[in-house]
Image 1: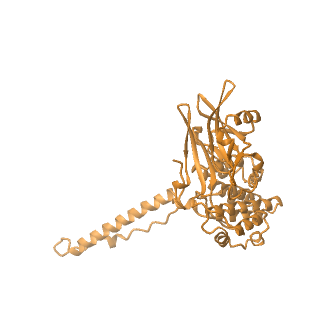
Image 2: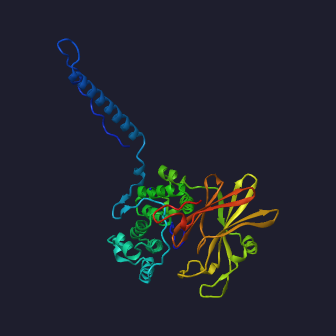
Image 3: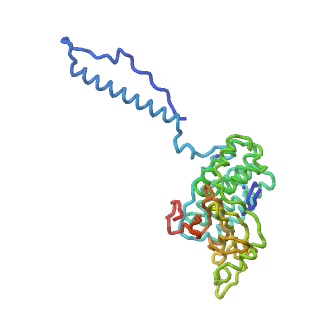
Amino acid sequence: MRTFVPVLCVLFALGCDDKKSESKDKDKKEESSDGKKTDKDKGDKDKGDKEKEDKGKKAKDDDEAKKEPKKDEAKKADEVEGLGAIPPWSADGVGKPCTPTATAKKRFAELAKGTDADLEVGKADVEAMKKELAGDCHKAAIDLSVALNSGGFEQYKKKKYKEADRFWRAALVVRPSLVLARYNLACGLALDGHGKAAIGQLEEMGRAAKDGDPTASNLLEKAKADDDLKSVRDEAAFKDAVKAAQGGLVGPRKEPETAAAAVKLLPPEFLKGKDPIGGARTYKPALLDFWTWRPDADTELLVATVVDDPSTLGKPKGDMNTDYGGIVVLRRKDGALSLLLARKTGEIPPSVAGGAGGKTVRYSFDLMCGTLRGTLSFAAGKVVVKESTCSDAVAGEVPTAK
């Protein structure tokens, strides 16, 4: 199990029978007394030829449908008895920066405790809840989904798996892109005897991983050894689902000595900043997790996440603050450490995963406008950054790294 804002685990042929051809008698053409085809005969022949052409096309279409399911079929919501429809994964959009209301924040805190009676018994109207607490505020929807995920974890700790699943399913109704809640739901479903549905959620996470979501890749790797999923681990569909994880990085791990040395290499803006209420602020930065990245056969780099002060992790953030998380790339050669990149990514450290083939590093992070993504590549001795911003997309569209 993994506990990140609390995390579980502890973190988814068409065809129809061809119609029989018309009888040969009906296909026969009448002839006039002089043996020539009449106008009626010609019209009948054209009609007959068209019917045969239509039937041939239909048969071909049916054969194609049997060979390849429609794309939309992979995106249908799973139905689980006693739980309802589970929304399929879809990439997060962005919205205008906004702040949840005080009433909504109070409700989020209550939901995070897992004590909502209607949710526990499956009677809650989640869509109405989202409309009431989040409305058009994307940041509020993010916070609501996180609170519901946390509430599910509280139920999980009591071994009330069905109730936990209802919270996690609600989190996905609010925000289908929240792969953490989807992973938790997969675990809860497996523990509650819904193995097929559990694998279905992992398959949905595979779609997210292939789309570049680093959290999905990391959690699919975790699934390979998670005891909550041991009831489905031998299933062929499970093995296929976890193959979607995008590898390429070795880690994460802790490197205390490297972390201490790397802090001294950080740029000035990582050490000092402005206090939101005035004056200056001195940060206490720390590098948290490290990965080894080999973008080519001759290059070995270190990727790390950084935070302004580790004591602030997991604590509520004010509407106005200068906290930061970020991503760092280092080169370690002949015992010497050098800094290649230090980049801030919002208020908390980003999620990090390797891109396909290990050539790139992918990361994602949350801002007031929604979840954004970045990609790191290595060329001519430098780290190249492609990162989406809030201005790259409008609400409802998928932000892509540019």
